Each structure stands twice: as C-alpha cells, then as structure tokens.
Image (cartoon, rainbow over all chains, first blue to last red; front, top):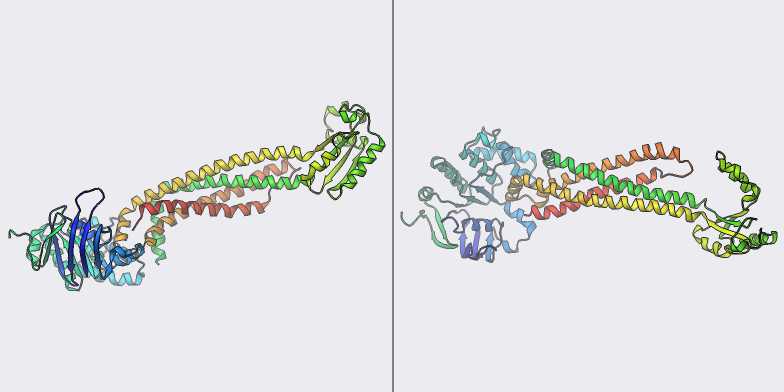
Length: 229
Length: 302
C-alpha cells in the first residue's frame, strides 16, 4: 500500500533534513498512528504520500506507483484513491453539508445521478443523516470533521490520510471521530493518522510509528503513545 | 465533464469579482475599440487611395506669355512643340492611358467653375492660365517616366503630379493611424496585465476551493477551466462592446457625418467593419489566453 525506501527530504531553506533515510512499509487494511513532536517530520511524510512534495532522495511507492516517476498529469488519478482529513476540516463555508461532500465528486466529473445516490449513503455512514442542509458554521467541530471525513471517504478510497484529525476537538468528540475512522478502516480502507493525542493512541492499540528529528525511532504493532506508559 | 457545475463556478467567480470583471470588460472594450478604429483608419486610407489614384492625372503645363522658367525662355509654346509633345505622349502608351489637351479657354471655364463664388475669378483672364496636357497613367506609380521625359523641355513650363500632393495627405493619415495603433497596442498590454491581476485575485479568493479540488484529485483542466472561462467571457464581452463601438462609428460618424459632408471621396464600406470584427474578437480572446497562461502556470499548479 505504502512503501518508503531510504527516503530523505531536504527543504531548500533548511540545513537539517525533514526526513532522514526513512524506510517504512504499510500493508493494505492497516490502521497506523504516526506520532512524534512537532517538527519531527510527520507532515512531510504525509505530504510525500500525497505527492505534494517530491523526495530529495529515495523512493516512495503508493498504491503500486513509484511517485518520483509519476508524471504530473497522473497525480490527480493518484489522489482520487486517497482520502484526506485535516485538523482544520477545510470545508467550504458557503456550501451546505451535502454540497461540501458533493463538491469532491463534482470536481472529478461524476454525474449528478451518482452524486445524489452516494452522498446520502456516506452521510449516513458518518452519522450526519438529516443534517444535509446545514452549513459548516451551524455545526459543532465534531460534526464538521465528520463532514470532512464523509468528503474524504465518499469515493471509497483505498487509503485515508488523517493529519491530526482530532487536534481541534475535545476528548469526548475525538472518541466519536476515532470510532468513525475505525469503522472506515474495517470497511477495507487503510488509515494513516498523525496525532498528538496520547489517550486515543493508548486506547486504540494499533500500530504506532514514532518519528523524531526526521528518523523513525519506533515502529510497534499494538503500540502506545509513549514509552513512559 | 459537468457543464452545469463548471458554468455555475464561472458565474460565481464573475459575480464575486464583479468590480474586477467590469474593469476587465471596460479595458478590453476601450483598447480593442481603439485597435479597431486604427484598423478602420488603415482601410479608410487604402479605400481613399484606390479612389483617388484612379482619378489622379499628371499635368504638363505648357509655356504661356508670362512664364519665366528657363524652359520657357523661347516665349509661348509653339504649335510644333505642342504637336511634338503630344506625339511623344502617344508613344508612351500603354503607360499613358488617356491624353487630354486643355486649351486656355477650357482652363478658364474650369477655373471659373471651381472658384465660382470667389472674387479671385475677376482678377484672372483667359490668357493668364496655361494650356496643358492632362495625362492619365495606367500605373500611377510610374510618374517619373513622364516627368523625366517632359520636365525642362522647351515649351513645357512644369510637370505636375497630383499623386504627390495626395501622398502627403495619405502620409499624414498614415501617421495618425500609426499613433492610434501604438496607443492601442500599449492599451492591449495594459489589458493583459489587468487580466493577469484579476485572475490572481480570483485564484486567491478561490484558494480554499482550489486546495480542496487538488486534494480530491480534480484534474488541472477542471481546476483551471473556470478561471480560463471567466477571463475569456470577460474579454469576449469587452470585444463585443468594442465591435459595437465600431459599428456605431460606421453608422454615426462615417455614414452620418463624414460621408454627407465630404461627398468628393469614398469611405470605408461595411466589408471593412465585417473584416475587422472577427480580428477584434480573436484578439480579445487571445489576450485572455495569454494572461491565463501567464497566471495559471504560476498560481494553480498541481
């Protein structure tokens, strides 16, 4: 699903690499937490998977494609198979819940008959049935993140990338979001989630990859957030 | 391809950026309008050239009593000289297409007709006007052949080419047209810059949508198309206004004012306007295309 081979990423403005000789393999159907302090390289790793950046050295394979050799016009096709969720939700404030999810399908040219069918389905999955007509500012933070997850999942992607999805949410709401991500994982989507939320990682008992200073310092099945626990 | 969706986005974009859109439309209209006018002046010049060059003649004025040029030192032109000139003119056919001899009496009649309402007529007698040969050339540019054959020859006071007088006038018109063209081209450059900036603002105000589109895997085409269409529509509207202005110029200024007051010359017809209109439309759309190319490459990358 995802394979990093001796990947180094050096940003032009910095002397220390954001990722330094990182090798990592994530199998189909896994649920992986990516933990580590700010600046440890989590975001860079996720951006490399989305091909928002290119590696300075080494190879990244995603869904069977080596991204360094992927031509620009094929990037959209790659991203259609990857759902993305962010800490700040990234919803369109002037669109309703339904329209926000539908937007993701419209811009890749799906017919409206298809949209009318799948958007209510996915809103049902994320638990937002009945709130299709609301605008983001009429929703709680947790509900907004559910809209974002619905948008990421509506294409039934093989891979879901979540960059601190619970970072802006209170613990109770976060649990709900984690349950939802767990459900999506059980539906067959590989989930890669970066987080600072120790309680969640400890509770879920899934694979944990820890980054520090651009190196992988820990890779544990059924891990916890920190050694201390 | 979701035409409805794309057109909806375009409509939103145009509304959201209404003032900038208006600025683009007006600038495109003004600069293309000026461009159109300068093209119209050019075809006016060529229309007038066709019209006048057909009518211009070379005049060979013969010596009369009062002439004081060197070639007239022998006094008034003799019959032998006049016949020789005519024979030589005949030998220049087919360059010389028509030869017409104008006697003093005819010159006087024509003069009095031309200046019928002027007191100058009272001071001119028949003898003061020279007799002349009026010659039409099949190719008016070959004037020099005639001039060199007859100028300075005994009995010939002067060889005059009306074309040279007209050429001065046409050069003036050509200069005006060039100035208009330069101003128009400057305006067109300004227009491109304005469209570039407008698209930049549009790209900025839609950055949220654009970032989401990139994330969910929308193709470049889908991301850029609304911007392209917005620019093309604004530029197209501007071009249509410019074409409207051109038509108005033809109807009001040329047909309404100039043609009735200056009946002695020809003015551009509708064929010129119809020829210029598509040039304006294409230029407008090309402007938007250039601007879009400059902007989108930089601000809307995958």
